[in-house]
Every structure is written in structure tokens, then in C-alpha cells.
Length: 379
Image (cartoon, rainbow, N blue to C red; front, top):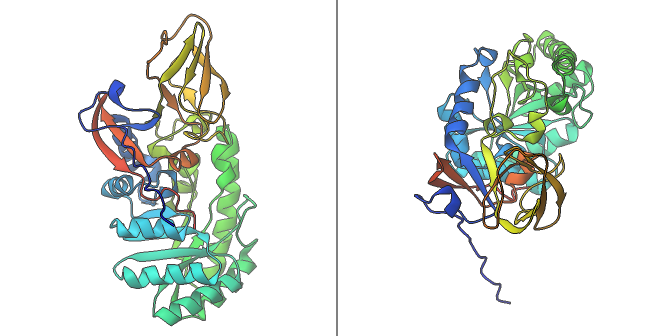
């Protein structure tokens, strides 16, 4: 059977004006992106901390390179296939901040350590079966990987429940010479979007108490705990100030989205700005209602739809290929057929995974086009 060649549509070329970009397209404001990078790394909230940004947010090798050039020690990703993409792109310190199970996947992970001998590759575990599968694969390939024990600090998704379980699993890891016990993964995912500063602080105070007890339990038994890692865009100042964590994993900070914009701002944290947009075209206009050419296949709605980056209009509905805006009040632009408004994604991570490229602009002129190399890397 002859398969049809996939159409590779390039929405823009260097030198194009913003209104010349084909739509729908992801458009990055490079000035805002660079400001977000600098704000994080210069902030007192990360001073003295290892910063390991989460690349599942952007899936883009060029963004990872720029994060490391700004001072990050490496990146996180969630899947073995993502790790492979970033290793191929020259990123040499990667933590798969997730559990990996199954012979094919653990063998694929171990093989990456062989193919990229200069790289440091880590992975999380929360069960002895995972440890043994990983050890078997590494032993067969003469590979070595770092291991982080995941502790459930309140999210209720993965991780061992307490210090005793951490110590037991660490002892299992130490039985296998191809595995290097590095420390703890102690990420509280759902705390990132608790709306008030008080709620987020309280959540991380609890998480840090659990992580600190687990770290102390490991050290008391003569076991390794060089790194306690966790934290995201919504909470990293609190992990930093806990005295327990020495590495944080913010990801969305560099691009931002509507959902993070709903969090109460804490003055101790850097003020990140939206830097990534969905450029759309008005394909139908009827008075106070316009229809855009981007819908569910251009942005995720799990945290709500993409929202206009301007006043005076609100989303009335979203379908596969359309978003309907209606006018509210007298403010904002008059949208007419052919206009190209910008929307802010509701949730960056799954929106990125719907696109092949990011169009990079400065002062409304295209300066580059960055491929999203890890798009679809879900294995």
C-alpha cells in the first residue's frame, strides 16, 4: 500500500508581517519570551537553586536550548520518546519525571543511555517491579541511569505514600549496580492551580514536610539523597523557600496561559507575561458576532477555551474548526472579515501538541520558525 505524503504546511517565512502569517498558527512574542526567561533566572526565588524546566510544556528543542543557556541545569520530560527527541537535539541532562513500565519502554530508556554516553538520564520509580525491570534492561545493555523515588506529597496520582516506603524502595535500587539513586521526586501537580497564594503556600508547606522527612529517612539509613526536586510555575517560590528542595521544575512560566493567569499573584514571585498566542483569521463576520478559523483542533479546552488577547469580545462557543466571538460593551477593536486576532491558550501543554511549528515574531515581524520536534511523543 502506498501511503500519501503528509502535507507539511509552513504558516510563515522569516520577514513576514504578523498579518501575513497563515492561520491558525502558534505565534511567539520573542520579547516576552526572553523577559520570562530572564525574570525566572534573576529572581531571588530561585537564587541558589537548580532549575530544571519542564519541557513537556513546549516540546521544542530550541526553547530547551535557550532555557539551558539562561542557566537551567537540564530539563524534565514525561515520556521516553520525548527524552529521545531532546537528546537528539543536544540536551544532555534529562529527567523523565514519570514512571516507566513495560519491557519495551524500559529497554528504550536504557538504550538512550548507551546511545548518548555523555548525557545524564534520570527516571522516577514508585514500585519495586519498575526498579527490577529497569535494572534488567540496563544490565543487558551495560547502561546506567539515575533513579528518583517519587513521593506522593498530596497530588494523589503517583508516588510512594511515606518515608518507610521511600527507604524500602531505595534499598531495592541500591541492589542494582546499573542504577544510581539520585534522590526524590516530590512534585505537587494540583497545587499549581490553587487560586489563592495562601492555598498554594499551605500545599507546599505540607509537601515540604513530607519530602523533608523522606530525605532525612534516607540519610539516616546511609542512603543517597542528593536532589529533592519538584515545584512548578504556580508554586516554585515556596519549594525554594522550604529548606528542603534544591531543584525546581517550572515549565509554563516561559509561555504562560489563561489558566495560570487566574492564579492570585504573589509579589515575591516574578510576574510572567503571556508570550504564546494562537493567531486566527476572521472567516465570517455578522455584526457583533465573528467566527474564527481555529477551534478544538488548534487549542485545548480542558482548562477552558483560548481567550481573546484584547478587550471587548468574549468566546460564545468552540467547535472542531471554529471559535465564535461576541462583542461585549463598547471597548476593544472592531473585527471585520480577514482580520487576524490573537488568542491566549487556555492550557499551553496540550495546545502545543496540536501544532508542528512555533512562528517566532519580534515587533510583529517573523524572525524565525521553530519546529515542535516532540509533538506526538507520547510513548
